[in-house]
Length: 109
Image (cartoon, rainbow, N blue to C red; front, side, top):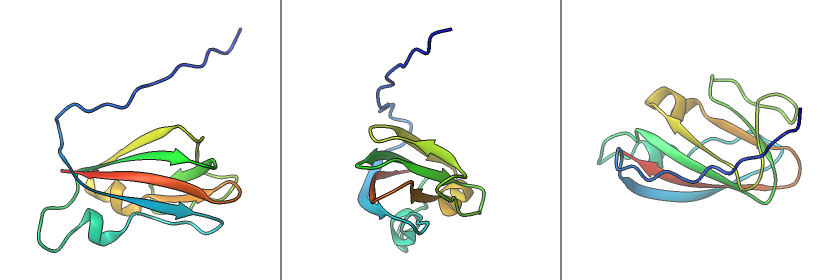
């Protein structure tokens, strides 16, 4: 059976509205989202975070444990994931498989 790669386009559905963004550098230590971005003191908590990956592949987890270079969901440059829900956003952690990966984020509520 041949492997067929498909391209998925970003969704902008209007369910949530983007209100902030940041670029996070991931290296050999697990990193998460910035708390003041997803839970600002003067506004409601983010409902979702759109994350696109640049430069290097990452591994990520959102179960409260840190990923390693060999454990966690794999995401290659050009890929994206939408993290939905307060607990998942707070628990999200990513690590670069090698080098430095850039996580481009948009916070939505």
